[in-house]
Amino acid sequence: QVQLVESGGGLVQAGGSLRLSCAASGLTTYDMGWFRQAPGKGREFVGAISRSPGFTYYVDSVKGRFTISRDNAKNTMYLQMNSLKPEDTALYYCAARLWSTNLQNVEYHYWGQGTQVTVSS
Image (cartoon, rainbow, N blue to C red; front, side, top):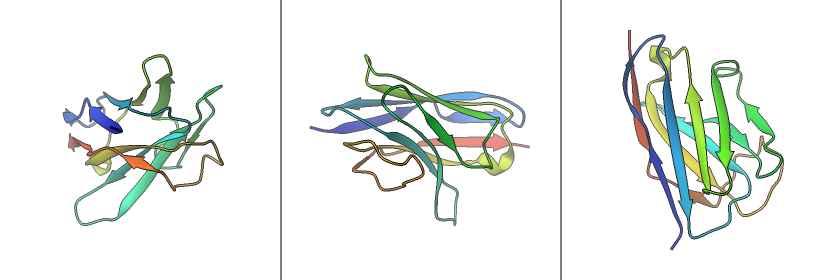
């Protein structure tokens, strides 16, 4: 059974940090990505990481503040979020696909259920 499980969300003040995790099971993940969806808005791509050697891509709104990493031995991806802003408040999802392609490609095979991040002003 394929599962992606996010964890690490919570409530943080503006300027603070959070680290999200995405644990994958039941599959060998190649590219993995993070998305978010704020209330009343569509899903937004945040960034992605390749399996090896771990190339990354970020959208402009998080570049320099967020860092994506992964531990292939643990089949887990991370999202370190620093200098958080109220506009980062959203449900954060991880996703995985079964091959590597352009990291800006937002088509994925598997999705997690999401973890809530709330940034207070």
